[in-house]
Image 1 (cartoon, rainbow, N blue to C red):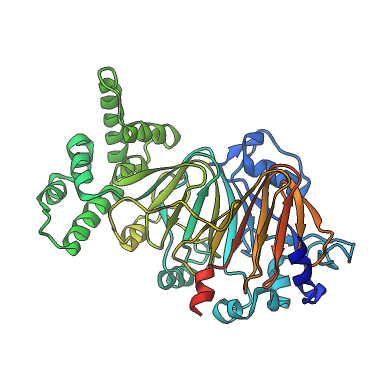
Image 2 (spheres, rainbow, N blue to C red):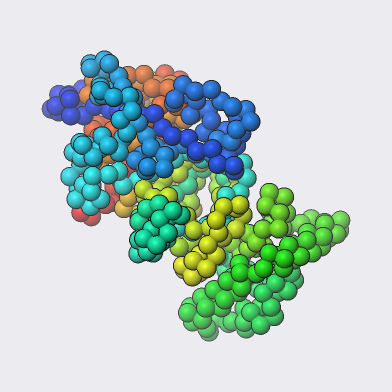
Length: 441
């Protein structure tokens, strides 16, 4: 701790204070209920609230998005390293707007006076919608013409870092896998027609990427655009067939998943479309990133999620919400193949960094055994820390530090050096602007 103490003396104490945040929770129907939900437990500790055992707790939002704002917690002690605020209801967004220097010069030049990332914790009990997020160009168009559905004009690349075992559907399966699916799931050909199915079988290695994309777009669009009556009939047929076949063989993992989705969303086109997508199983500590215009659906588990500051979602299945099938099918890239899984890069014995190919964000996972310490060097952009387990002491401008416990969320301004020491086993996650952005700029 001595080296940190020496370096801190060169900074203006008032300019590098941390700020505790009270964060919004989203009670979407797919969230885990009551104390089964990590989101519920963290949110209750973060906001000193009671947990409703019957209520779903799906997401905590940590950031400046207006659909789930964070607020600065007033702290009367001027000497404890935390900034004191005059109002209990000052949002992080408004405070950042009034104090853009906390973002750092390069961040303000690139993104203006707002936090470029949105940090979340998710507790998923049942599948989210099959969805994609628009790129910046499409987001501007959607927001202009349908602002009630698309709340902002930003893109939404995102990354999910598994806290528990975490399941998702992400991206299209390979062409060879799709041919096997069409062979083994006759209901799909019945739904889309033999002409589209045969086009898939006719593709060879000699065909160029544009042709493959065109064929995949055609069959997927026909599938997603089928009538409700036809979808209901086809899913019933498939369910009955799989029930009979399960008496004589073990169903595949994808078949079992599809039946699980059907129980959650009966007669939903997303049940059938799941056959077209990769089933991804993340172990704790593994991460999945998703670019613009890529289809995906989280299925089960708990994760840390980070994304560009946006809430734009184009849905087309596994949801009772508004579905925009035409927009989704036209916007997708139709890239095929299994998504890249990030294992993270060790920054030291206790900190692992996850770097997606997006400027807006990166995520660090810090796992500290009792009595150990980890340092987070000063960076030219802001950071948000969330404590998901344990207790410790966080040091910044004040050498005596401040106690942090499970549920605490803290905003660290740009150019703030942080050190954390654990009082018990401690798990804390940090989101910040992607360090590659600063190296490139």
